Image (cartoon, rainbow, N blue to C red):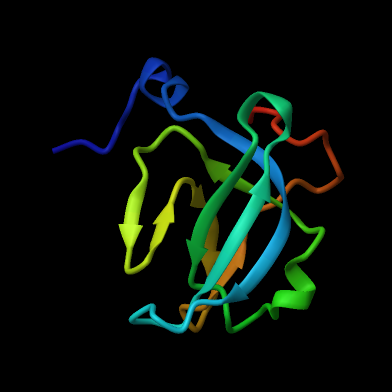
Length: 113
C-alpha cells in the first residue's frame, strides 16, 4: 500500500489561515484541550475548533495568533463542542502539539499554496 497521493488529491484539502479570537479551557474533553474560535475572513467566517495544545500554549497566548486549519472536513462532535475545522500542528519530541502557522501575518482566509 502506497502513501502517495496525486496533486489533485492534495488540492481537495482546503487549508486556510485564520486568527484565533477566543480560546478557553475545554474541561469536558477526555485529554486536555482548548475550545477555539478562529476568524477565517469574510468568505469562511468564524469557525470553532477543539485543539489539544495545552502543553505549549495558554488561552491568553493564543488570542491574536494565526494558525492553519483544514476548513473542508465535515464538522465533528467532540463532547458538547461541534468542531468545524481541524487546527493543524506537529508533535514535538515529547508528543505535545506545536501549532502550524505562517511565518508572517497574512490575510485571514488565505489558502495554502
